[in-house]
Length: 335
Image (cartoon, rainbow, N blue to C red; front, side, top):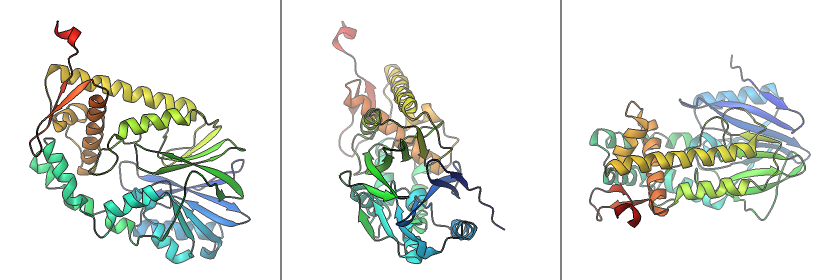
């Protein structure tokens, strides 16, 4: 028998549904909102046999018929949020809503014409990753395809038009860094934010540089965190861990975290020039799974490029050659 620890947040009109995913996170928060228009599910989770059975158990427990579900709203394209959307749409006939940018990213990474299993190893090789890691990447990337199949038919959401969920009007708030086209949803009257992975309590959202995607992901992320300060949030509902009531404080803490990491990497580069992989090794070690290493490497590169953007580091290496980063030495330090 499947047991799901569903939690109802009555004041917010939101039901929190934890859905299984792979370690290290193990669970993603899906949310269910009931309104006169019908039921909306936010971020249904990855598609696996386990998660299909979990949703069957949830619908049975909450006495929901698939026809009651009128919309499936996605904050972003990552498999642990987007994956079940197409399958669930086939069961319910519900509209799937996400940003155009997020859907384009999903198709580019998980679509039938994707070459990410080649492009990502190519990028990492240029930044010094050894072959024993590179050989694991294609199979690792392709393993997610089954979690996002079938692809949904999507209705695009923009920041200009509100989204109706649970009988209330939610403002779409787009942010970059963690995922291009990521949407959070803000209920101004209730001071409630459905923030996906844009802001997480306790853990820092991964900020990844990947081929042909956001060119300055850390800059985009910090810019978004500063923009979130304009929203008065009493309660935030994140993609992972528990809902929290310190959203605005958390945005400031995350900015400080990345400023400290940038300073740490800058200090490493002052000692010697490093490849991206060498910097990654110094930050995260190598006792990682291929999944963890992919995120660690992409995050390291995002920070290195932000140091370059800020004029605190320089990138050395011609097209096709191994790239290294060195600390930028201002003229006053050289005199």
